[in-house]
Length: 195
Image 1: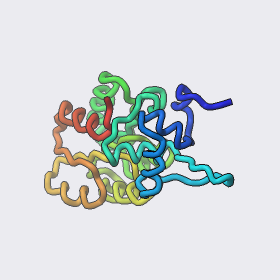
Image 2: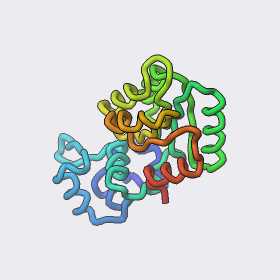
Image 3: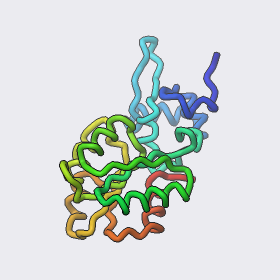
Image 4: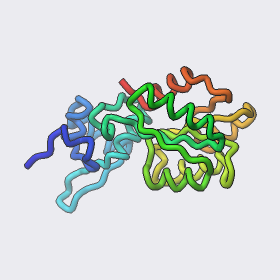
């Protein structure tokens, strides 16, 4: 039985034809992306190309291609908020949940952040730089060097001078505290390429 696009929320592996249907492009385009090492893939023992869901999402973000809603798990992007100020995490969590389309988790320190990223592989991390344990810069560096490198990281800090360090560590965007939530949301939509 062939897999249909409606299964794509639970699918983790795609054929080149499934990717071409999801993105409304010619199958040859998908093969070209693979041949040019733009889209990671592997071959089955029979020689067929397969693309992992996480690699496909990473490719879409990197090349600023809108993410089809059917690729989002349960229609939501997963967001991990890392901040040791409980009030800030709760306000931010409530803000994302009000906007809709986000499944939000919060932690308050660097070690918990690394464990949660390894476990849940969130689409987006909102990361305070000044957190207990492993600081945000090291958290960012480790995530971007590991299997969850496609996770988008928006770093936040009350210290504007931290911007250069966090961007060098692989952060995607830096915002200063206090957070301008409309600006944050605009950046999130742009980075996740939501339609």
